[in-house]
Length: 145
Image (tube, rainbow, N blue to C red; front, side):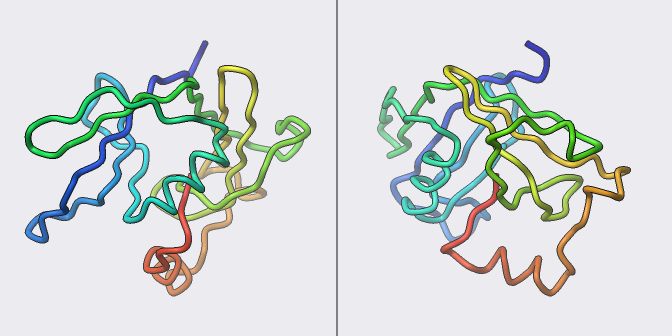
């Protein structure tokens, strides 16, 4: 399946203020890249619900890092036109090309697809103005896909 990625989540017992790390980080398997990060359990739980996933505990190491796997494969697709979106998608703010834009989530049995607007598609790629982008990131009640 093109664009499909296995994902895992780590939780640190205590965030070290010397490093810019969130309490919860969503990682791409086999990569150093991160899909997402959350400062609160509430944000992580809301993201999990939107994405249709369940976290499954794998391990907690002696450093206080807990690792979870998720029960869905996550696919990420760039789109050009609204007509490319399947019926039943859920709109949610997310990142595309470093900007916060409207993205769409489609949950099916075993696969969650995140549709992100192609940055060259001006009809669908409409980033938040910088002031709103900064405010969105500072609001701990909000999260991105």
